[in-house]
Amino acid sequence: MLRMFRTHKIRKQTELSSCLWDFHTVPEDGSTPARRKAMVPGCWETYPELRNYRGKACFEKNIYASGNIRLEFKGVSHTAEIYLDGKKVTSHYNAYTPFSAVVRNLPAGNHRLRVFVDNSFGENSALHVENDYQTYGGITRGVAFEELGQAYIRQMHVTPEKTPDGWHALVKIIIHNLSDRIFEGRLNLAIEGCGESCSSPISLAANAEAEETMEMACPDALEWSPETPELYLISAVLDDQTGQKADDLIDRFGFREVAVRGKDILLNGRKLRIKGFCRHEDHPQFGCSLPIDAMWQDLLIMKDLGANSVRTSHYPNDELFLDLCDETGILVWEENHARGLSEEAMRNPNFERQCEDCICEMVESHYNHPSIYIWGILNECASHTEYGKSCYEAQLSLIRRLDPSRPRSFASCQFKNDLCFGLAEVTAYNIYPLWYHDTPVQEYLEDLYEWIQNCTEGAGKPFLVTEIGAGAIYGYRSPGREKWSEEYQAWAIGKQLDAVLSHEHTSGVYIWQFSDCKVCAGWFGTRPRTMNNKGIVDEYRRPKMAYEIVREKFGAE
Image (cartoon, rainbow, N blue to C red; front, side, top):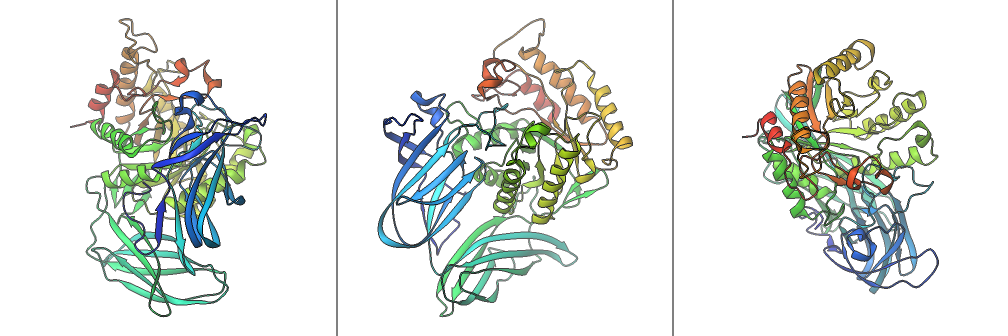
């Protein structure tokens, strides 16, 4: 399953996920590995014999195809090399962003697709490093191939705009001509149940790409909001010069606008008050490759707790999860992939390129999701150094070029030492009073906020607490309320939420974290069970004592 709706009616798409592939590891010593079947999507750490395997493996499958085809991978963890009939087609780095490749002029018949996957760490990998979450191995999200004609619609971005005469949709479409001859035709746009269709003539040079921009008036459109998550399907259909339908692309969006005014974040002109969770894609049965039923269950639990938002810490999420957020009205802070990297780590020669590739793939593929209200970058990295600041500036500027419609932010932990608040529209801090130190929450929060307002370029901007919380081992009860007990976590989170939610100028809070999650082996010394245990539910989604405290503080009904 790739999306919650059909993305093509004309272009033929064949899904290669939700099925078995041939699989084997690729041992470094060159020995012949055992072969087996593997479910795609999936993580090989869920196979009994490979629970701690870090290295290379190969997934293989036959596909029947002819002509021009497009291979689409929603996520491979974390380095991929794609071969078709023994010929390398493309390669990709980063587990959390989609990528594709077009192969031209295939003869009709069966073709062997091989995907070589590597989840090992090394100097070439600046972002996937030993960290406070697990880097799994496998084809972890959906896969498909599509059969293309002479030209195809590569991308469609929809930007809603509120005008005095009602909503408009500004639509930007990229069309690619795959042939050695000029393509003449027509592009047709329609929004299901809203507004009038429109069309425009198209002329594409041989082997060229063109961008078309069209505007559609939708005066009767219903707004998307957390309370009323109204969604619309938009279809782009490409006709050739004879009037035959050559290609199509269907996507989904919502009519809403996000803005920053003074110290407030506004959605459709209304002030947002965020009550959210940070969430890792992690489950003991599925690794990072959660089936849609498990994603849905996570959202149901968050809704039961009274949450209205989720932070995709610390990487772009599976698009199916974003689809569910669109449908349920859960606001999303989505961020690129980097966590806790020092200046030394950020000086890795691959760092900036890998970060910017991640940003481009994240924004370009997830642009139309109305639930995404803010883009984030570089969680807890070196925003307190001049070199770090240059990286923040480059990446935030890239986001602005790709999407000027959403505010930008980053979660800092550089208390009284951050240099980057002038670069983003929203200031955000990760704080852990009553866990990593015993400072009273209200005192710590006031001190931090006053410093931001009086001593930084974040003055006058919205402020979010993007992490706060305390750890607890599920089932560990202690009348003395020692740390790591469920009693201590419940008490600490109650104090934390009282202080943050009563702070007049705080736009909201994200609890760290929704559920306990697995961490890399190198973190065992500071993480009991080799898990980050700050979840309000444990890794199996069993509630801890803090669950009812959060429900009360978030005002769940």
